[in-house]
Image 1: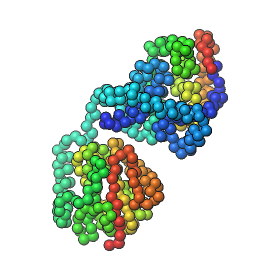
Image 2 (image 1 turned 30 degrees about the vertical axis):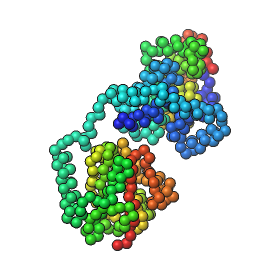
Image 3 (image 1 turned 60 degrees about the horizontal axis):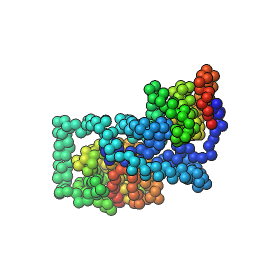
Image 4 (image 1 turned 120 degrees about the vertical axis):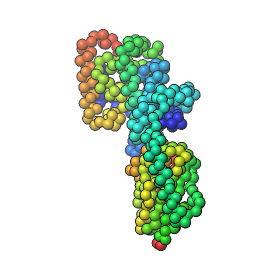
Length: 167
Length: 257
């Protein structure tokens, strides 16, 4: 990909990727790092990117999964969990999203985390999630039921989580 | 703890829906529904405006050129594609093809450079015809041609890219004449083989498109059909079919000999 094309793509889609990363990571430097890493992936998977009929939608998902990978990183989880459990006035941004996000990461298996993010944090409708992931709406409903069941089992087994409030 | 998945339908556009609108990716029924909602929802209009302003702030906040430079350094130089690697066989083959074309042109009385080289920006597109009497020469927009005559294409792009050529005739049939053909910058490419003009009389627009990525024949055909639809199904009125690419065309008139 030549420089001019990449600059155009970066300018067109970079704002969305950075917004996504800031929402999910709640750390500006981590979000800028994620911005770089997501576009690095675009460059390394240029053929796949070119094949996308809807590049912004593809990047939305790539950015989400990248941020989930960052949050799953063992070293970062500790500091981010501490940040998420601070009062909303200190944490900044959307107070609800990070609290829900921390619970998701602690208690849900990875394949359900992405769907849970779209449903709980982004409040996407089932058909939107289905279209985004290329699966049926029924599959999304089933996965979300699995997610609820896993969280319910996890909270029964983990009293430490009970002090974190949800909306 | 968490409500049942179905219990939280939002009355507003989702973040994804808004991002699609900003990126102009919302289409069909989704776009119509989003537009209808925006017309009635001040909150979503405000969210959309904020996203658009965020995009404007981005270029002031982020050093885009510096970031892109860092990305390109991180991936390193791209390996030369096979069609750009020098090889004796390819070089000799190229010379041989040019020699054959020149002999064909010279043997049929063609002199000098074709008179009509359509150039749109950095793209040159020549159509050379061999008529029913065997005479060879370049054709320009508006020229008359006849069924049974043969045409060949020569394309020169200032910057490298991938070429596709399609024709849209008076019967509104879209025919791909070439697709995903790699072009080196500044090097003329003569497409292999001649095309024998068929019996469909009337105007035909032949469009050459060069993009930074390969275009499959199906994609080129779809783009041309879109352009034809926009032109009220008149090949003479087709304008750009691929706004993201370099493009030029020649309009010929097919008549009985």
